Image (cartoon, rainbow, N blue to C red; front, side):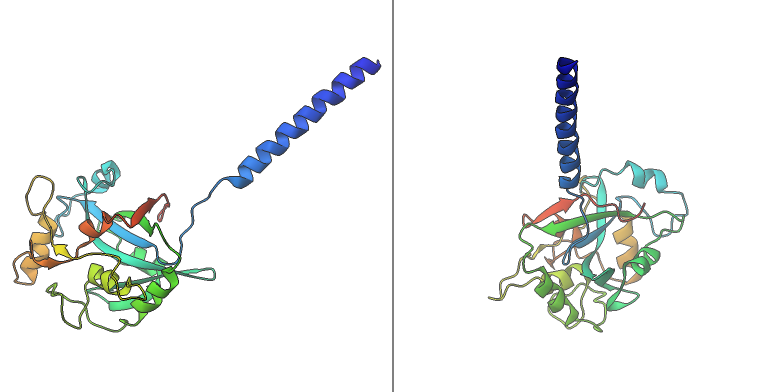
Length: 230
């Protein structure tokens, strides 16, 4: 009887240890949440058309998130304040503004009721994120730069990020390059043709500046697996 009890309690002890290890493993799992200074990239299929009334849900679902398959048309700054999540960005509708994430999602809902692809990218060194968010706020109230000019008071989306993410020493975390609006096959996506057509301006291909596609590939960023829309 003693041997049986000893065996029983030995098994129980081992079970208890294993259970504790499982609980600890579960508690140690890293659950990704939005951080101050995260960047939210908005992606559409390369051939998405502003005027096309077709259902593009399947195209968005098929997109892998790689820049060969998705056209990032917008980038916004995330601000996390207590239990609230805010967007700071530059859009045609609002200019440079700060508003709730839910409002941002409503603004970007597509005409078929679906959403674009939302990708979150974070600075690999994120310790000064709060200061970058505060610098972005200095641009609140400015108009949207419809013509993508680099040296005026107006701001377009990636230009705002470029100007806000500046170190204390004045160095920019992001870079300006000849802007690229082409897809992987070398053609200009319909979206950009229509947008700049409405502005009566050529697509500013190769002009010096920033754009969301190029910015998304900066080496200072890493992709974070967070679902914005469930």
